[in-house]
Length: 258
Image (tube, rainbow, N blue to C red; front, top):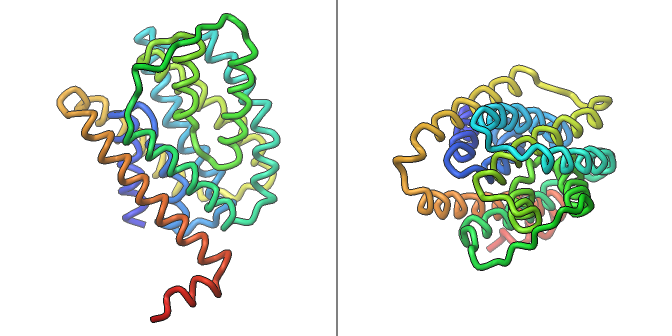
């Protein structure tokens, strides 16, 4: 439990320092750190990530960094995608859920290690369908796995809607909060919440995010991004191994024999 709560603080710290990526650790922290069953951990993760993103969005809104048109379009698409995502999540075995999640973690880790590319052309579009379509995909992913999806939202906002990186990160917080809320609605009928644990996770994540914002200017963010990306990749391998052991116990046991 101590490990899980420490990870919750680290999740918020990463969000405050790096803008995205930290919330990807919420689900494995609950499953492997606190022993929460996978299908209960998904809606609990949605609550933690949603609250943390909402607090961050409120701060960014006061600074005027949010593009509300893009946020609303993404959120509408996300709400539509959350319905099938949440329904699918409850029908997939927990071990399969975590195995898929490990793949998403690997993608996030690699993206953080590579950093933000500046040579990718920006294709600005005033059309609404790219934002709606991307929002739908992110909403499905969020409700299915309990991940925020900022690693998808931010690049789309940059490259297709022409937002600067600070505005894209700020706007993504609104989208993440809205998608998490939609996902929670879908999961509400069958979710079993540990409200004490969820509240502790959310409180520590928000505190960590505030600390990350305060010290972010004093730390080498590129170095931190690489270090955190490596940690996420290591966690992806751990989650994949754990999930594979549940899905294929005989193979896992034979592989461990001398």
